[in-house]
Image (cartoon, helix red, strand yellow):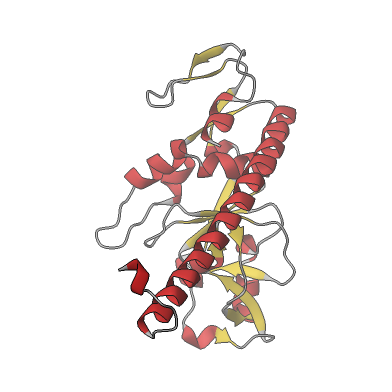
Length: 235
């Protein structure tokens, strides 16, 4: 992912200095922009915060997204918290839409991101999160770029909280993004979707094998210590 979003897919392309020491060279036809010129970033404004009194049961309000709903770059609503409709409609700028990119701006997982593929139920944000909207580039390329080490390393260094890791929206939007032409962004994003899906499939298979081996190990120990198998020849 890191190589694709900072070098592209053509190994023979001419490069130029990126202007960022730890990034090195980038393709010479790519543009360098600040994130603030590529997207808008919105978070929950302080005076529009909410308390436990604003939380409601499922079916009585909108989902309020938290970092725990962000898993492996995706939105997982298996366990959701709901906020009153009044509070939901109070902040239209943070209502989630497909192709938005959500980022954790405070808390132990700050910098964590997720891509919004679809919205089947109204969703807003809790105060720990912010959302990139109105992207002037491929939203999928943007998601991969912000999740790559180049940006994530900067995020880890931008902690302004003394006890709770925190970063300001102003700091986030000051980061630079190196953008190829839109068609190339789309090609890179499609390539990464395919290749990461393959890796995820292999990872799931390996995880399944590991879990089965653990079960076999437990069963083997249980059988040995309860005398269900004869281990005398092994001694």
